[in-house]
Amino acid sequence: MALSFKNILSNFLKNIDTSTIDEFKTHISSSLKSRSKEIEIDYQSLSSDKFESSEDMEGYKLYLDDCAYFTDEMEKLSDEFLIMALYKQLELHVKKATNRLAPSIDTTGFFNVGTLQKELLKKMSINIKLLDSYAAFTELREINNSIKHQGVVSEKLAKANSIWVEGQELNNLSKTYERLKPEISKYVLNFVEELAKIP
Image (cartoon, rainbow, N blue to C red; front, side, top):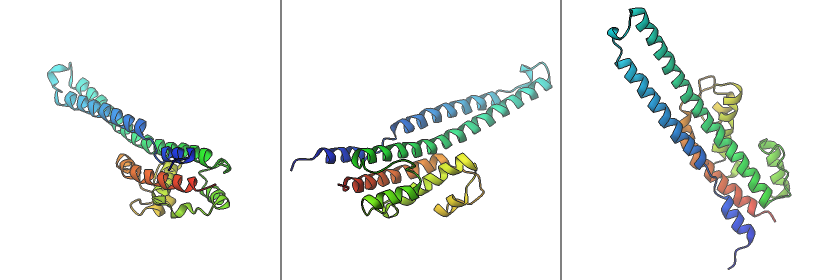
């Protein structure tokens, strides 16, 4: 049986590409590890005979402390970027898939779930809340919002997944990225499959 262009296109759109984000993650992780090692070596090589006075040595220790703190902050920032980039990639991919497979659907304000739900239900009985990994989509959206607005776990994020505690600092976002990435891929796959059914 011959495949239609729509089938070919939907097969292509079922996969979300996170390779650029993954490459960034690899590079920044390598860079931060290298910098942390340099700081550690500097600490270990500290010796009073290398300085004119003990005050100079203490001043250099403070400088190294600042370097270590900045490196930790850069790691947190890069972890936040992973989440924000994954969400943005998801947003762009879903909009592209919708525009190509179901151009009659208005994608304005698309990641307002209420608007999205209304548009999909209007065109076809698609309830996005029933899609595989919808919970991962919701969690990702709420982590992204927490990063942008509060900087800590929001009430909505705590409700989205019980591993998060409202008001606490957002930690382990690199691990969260790795946990959510395959679930977001499933969400995209199911979303595109449903879109492809729209005449």
